[in-house]
Length: 235
Image 1 (cartoon, helix red, strand yellow):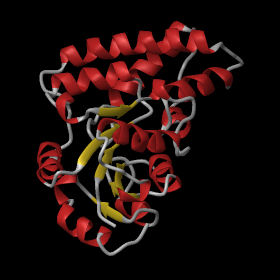
Image 2: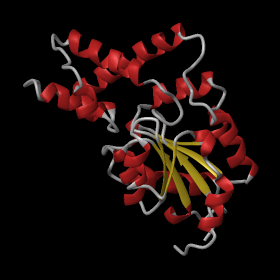
Image 3: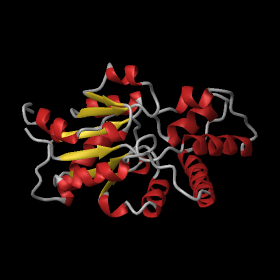
């Protein structure tokens, strides 16, 4: 078996924007005449889609809303997210990202992005960071009805990579997932993929227990060594 594709998570792997999301979800709740408790966002939402997060936050306050209304709220949040990024002179991208993408492409490995974040927010960041051309395959939160740790998003990424590159014949076991949350790591493993955890959100020792590889920073990732391991493993 060989490594054929690297699948990136978005928030917590590509961009460090947790504080922006917390601020905006807090604002969404305020507009619904509700408040966010201290530490509640991490407890309820870490590693989950905005849709699941907002739905649960509302439900826990006795507010059950339709999927259409949730979509209205998420579109409002996406618009506010765009305004917040306009205020930022330099996007808070993680160090080593450009070099890692160069390494992946120089080895002729395919790239995909798999995230519970809605496509509007992902596209905005990738375009501004001049990374959009490298991620021809994106599975976003609005492409699926489930959220991580469900494996559907990662399995859909394999399907779309095979559609984009018709001679690839990619299998899930030929993919490396890069994740920062426990839910995301479990999603990759549930899909039958090998997972590298980057300690941007959880401490190294927690990720080390559940990942095939763990690094403190993207700059520590040794793709050559990972490829060597893949070459000795059968699907």
